Image 1 (tube, rainbow, N blue to C red):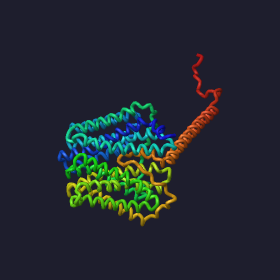
Image 2: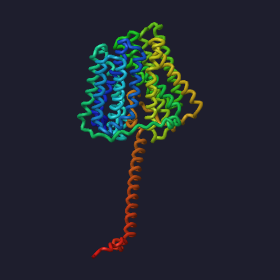
Image 3: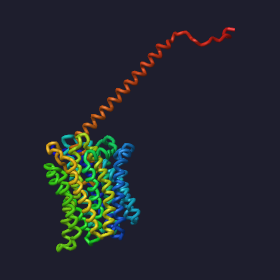
Image 4: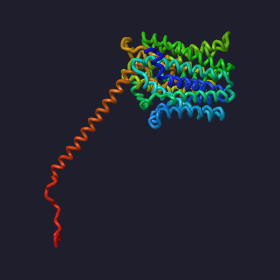
Length: 469
């Protein structure tokens, strides 16, 4: 079937995804920049990112229960309304403590809206179209996130207008989904994390995704603050962030393909070292003759390492995981990545308060070199999986836009989904057999009781001696 015909049934869902991601992209860059303009400390601004990451991770666990209770459409609409409320309140009540709460509200709501859209998409795809639809979904999320960040330069972040524009984008996300005639999918699968299984499967992947989260959390939340503190314009700040995302898109495929042909841990080591060198350059850009232009080159290279570092770690974990454990392992790694994104903003804020704006690069650089060092250390602790026994590297969306439900859209989830369906069928059959056996036992017990107490047996009750007087 041609791609346009495959996309047509999910066009409404993709439209909602676009508006949702655009609003998230705008909100993610607007709040750090506005906080910096207000003169708030790096600690306070870093707390925005940490509260967002904590609430987003909690949302991944809570949301399946909420969807089972209220349904997909009501949950999505309510969470989109919560997003609009959070961003509008941020424009009205400009206070750092309040913004920590508002950013947490946004993190919780975005986790839920992402999960609802992804579960809906998963219900609409087939095994034959899964790869194409997954690719289209990645393009839409990345384009929307990058485009949303460029909305800020069109307005003045010190005013309430960009907050209003962000709320409009979140409101627009409701319309296509609410009017869609697509049937609601089955309830979301509850998120379960088995840390022991993840570490037994691949220690370097478990530690690697945490460090990747530290790098990503530090960069995503504090790069806009860095740009504002060194005097970049709003357009230049948006470009700095978008260029880094572009680097992640450009570098992901080459790094992944190279890792298919050799021990992935060597590629992870090289990626971490390149990230470290780029971060060192970022610290000393002011001493270079080209000035701020070099920042964009550094951002491109750094983004090319920060974002793929998560994908490389997940790919290495899946080299050792059974096919039916793909979703379980990948989902658990995403939660560990979330832990790293909680630490990253505060860690970067600490170094920025201590050493100035360049502390943001120091935070990313130290996490990158730790990523490289541990990856290299693990090459001495475990033999690499033979190349012909590994699955090919698959590109993934930016981890900051992923939830555990994202992995059900990945082509590699086919075996896991089939195994889950077989398990569900087997469980249902076992329950039916158990019920049949129980009913049979009750019938047999009832028959034995009737045989032991026939209806025509003489009464053993004493007779009333006074009867008939």
